[in-house]
Every structure is written in structure tokens, then in C-alpha cells.
Figure (cartoon, rainbow, N blue to C red):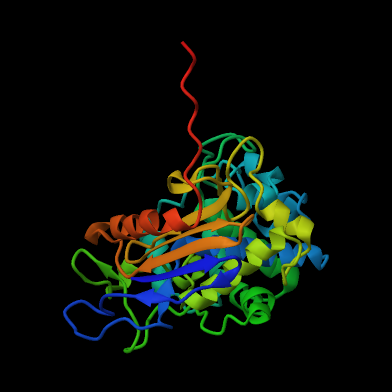
Length: 335
């Protein structure tokens, strides 16, 4: 596990504990890279926001116009949803396209990743909606992959290149990588008491816009600090009003663009930006308090099958007590 606190907008000393790989003595070290799972969704949304500010995209353009090559396959409801709905899980899309045999064909696919994503999305946009658009939040990885395909079409570059150019590079996040086979001297993910090294243990590379980037905790903190600084009007990547849009729940929900907005995260006073992420082999959680510049990042190289999720949340609950006051309680009614 790796833990890093942010206090008053500054990263504190990273703490690590445990092994990089089960049944080996090699310990995890400060600076190791961790898979962030869906915590990368906020980074995808930030990249899309950069393209909007550059004039390459608009928030209010209907999806059928953004990806006309998919329009013929789309369920009618999806044709007029926008980037705002895709990035806040309010398009009514299912969480994933549920044809697993088809999904796993992408593990061996050698075509360019933008081509793979469009192939996948041709089928995913034909899936029946699970809820009306622009209503309640229904978590959808497909929505983030659609947003990435929109960005690729608008910019003429693969998602991965756009992330390096628009987010990782400007913030100096040099450790960031989408490569899933880890090097011998890095932490590996675990599942069911073993190293997660089987082909179907991990998601295909085309799935990375929905989550899967690996990086050091220090580089993750660089991104998080910029997000909090943006709320105070001095972020590096975006205009203040764009940060505010990213961090505002859409409609009547607490689902923002790549973020969740929590009033009382882990029993503390918010508001806070939150998310957790896992591919089943890793688990990571982030809680940020933009008003104070405090935050907490925790990552583990195991998830629910080995208790990594519970351990991560337990550490977060304990450490967050020093980062924000307890939530306010309602006074007892007068008798």
C-alpha cells in the first residue's frame, strides 16, 4: 500500500508498506507506480476540458454529431446526449457492453487503439438504455470511452497521446503510463491470493479512458493539487470556470465530470471531491477538500478478493480525521 496526504496544497511524505509481489521479499518503495483504476476518469475529463477550451470541442454538441460514424448504430436516446452527460454518467448507458467473449478479443487486438475503441463502441451504443438521459447517475465506463473517442476524432490523435500532451506533460507527471505489463521491479496487482498475471485478469488497452493508468502517488498528487488549486483560481491546466464545471454535480446528482462530489466524505465535513478505482487487482481512493487544500490518496496492489478495498478504506478513515473536521450533527429537537 502507498499513502500520501496533501496539506494546504502541498504533498507530504509518502508512506509505503508491504510487498511488490506476493511470496517475494521485495518491498514496495517510495516512487513505485500504482494502478489507479477509475480514479483516472477525472484525468480523462480534464483532457476533454482542455480540448473544449482550445475550441476543438463543445460541451453541448450532440453525440451523433460528435461521432457520426456511430450514429446509425446508436439507440435513439444516445444521439443527443453530450459530453456533459457522458462524463457524469447521465447518458443512461449501461456500465459496460456485456458481451465478454467479444470484450476479451481486444486483449490480442493489434489494430491502432482508436480503431479498437470505435469497433467496441459500435456495439456498445446499440445497447438498450438502462435509464433516461439527464436523470439520475448510472455509472458507465462506456460513457468515458465514448468521450475519449470524441476527443480522438476532434484532435486527430490517440487518447494516450492526448493525455500526455494535455495533462501529464504540463503537470510534470513523468511516471504516468498506460502499459499494463509491469516491469520486474514494480508492484503487481493481485487477485484471489495470486499475482494477477493471466490474460483475462486485466482490461484491454482500448479500455484505458475508463480507468487503468499507472503512476507514482507523487504524480497522482500533482494532478490532485492542480484540481484543488483550480477551484481557488490558480490551476495550471484550465480556466477557473472550467475547473468549477468539472467539480459540480450535474443535474440533481452528486456526479460531476470524472469526480463524485460528497457532502460528508467518510464522515467528515465537505464538500469534497472523491472517487475510488479498481480493476479487480488494485484498489485506490482519493478524497480532496478544495477549500482547505487538504487531501488523501491511498492505493493498494490488491482489491476486494483479498481485502485490499477494506484495508484501503480503513486507512483512509483513520487518516482523514486530521484533514477535515467531523460532519455536523443535527441538534436534538427541543422537548
